[in-house]
Image (cartoon, rainbow, N blue to C red; front, side, top):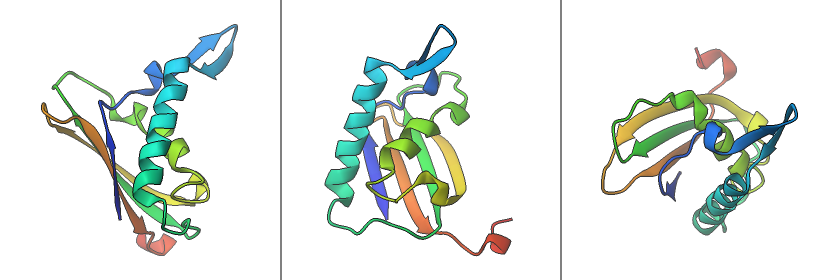
Length: 122
């Protein structure tokens, strides 16, 4: 199963802010999360919530080749799909993140698989 989230991938640095030693989600971060949730609901809406262990492959398509740390992009995605695609992101047993480029159509593709047995995940 695959979900495509349209738009330029945003890093955690653009979503979470700090104020007086406390972290919070910025207004832009909340709007992005709502957008991801709506897109996921439209694509996954009639399919029952996944409750088994899963493996995710996230492909980040950027519009340019600027230097980016791909580990800063998964939190908002995983949080956005909780309760829509899967019950909780604690079900994720394996996570693969791939960086690609598509100048004409930046986006995020999330491929969801049933997770193999834990001994098979090495």
